[in-house]
Length: 135
Image (cartoon, rainbow, N blue to C red; front, side):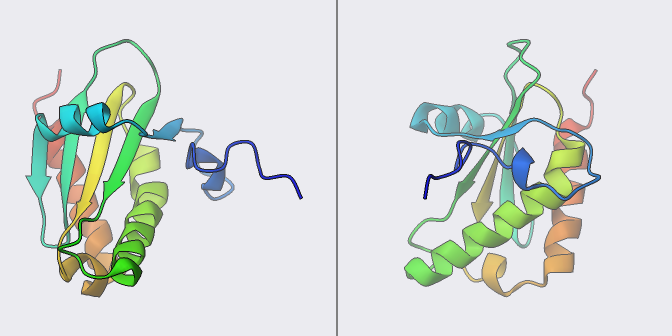
């Protein structure tokens, strides 16, 4: 069986049918994460959102996910990242600004135990906050 060509490289293919065509790619290089970490950020009860405008003229938005060992064992870290990926597909894909990088950083216990509806509301509010004042 041949693996899908876009496996692990983007989440736009996993978006539900009928959603707007947004080009979201997953960040792969550590340098991209470090640049996003030094830009705008908004902390919520469930996670931390880091966002930066690349200003490179590319229409692609990129997203990354981080869950450190502070989250817990591998099972909890993977669960936290799965929840963050689902949020990105549902909330971030339709609202992402072209040319921006977004990193969702899991918080210990909160990302795994907080209700999904609260996480969704947190992400919507965090996106409004990081894009506030943008020309």
